[in-house]
Image 1 (cartoon, helix red, strand yellow):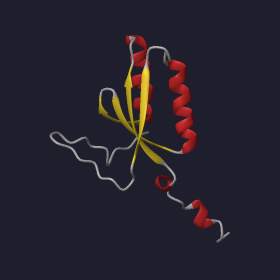
Image 2 (cartoon, helix red, strand yellow; image 1 turned 120 degrees about the vertical axis):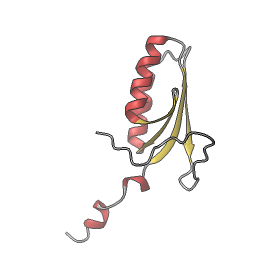
Image 3 (tube, one colour; image 1 turned 90 degrees about the horizontal axis):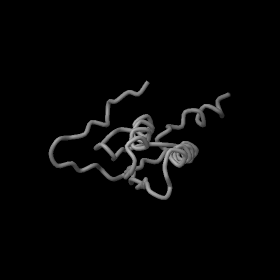
Length: 103
């Protein structure tokens, strides 16, 4: 039992990756659906820019769900991997991503 405990106590953030998700959607109906989907996964930075932290399988799931909602000939969703050791720099009004609890 004691040998298993260290494995069970691994922090999710040590295996998860943060991404900046940005999208440009050409249709208003698709835009609303994609906005709701990404909002459920992450923290809004601006209307079409979110910060998400996901495990590899979750990242695959998010991409699959987005692909189903998008028109791949017209729309674009970009993922930028964020460095875990890089601090956020913000000029002006701060975006609060800490202390948020999602239920």
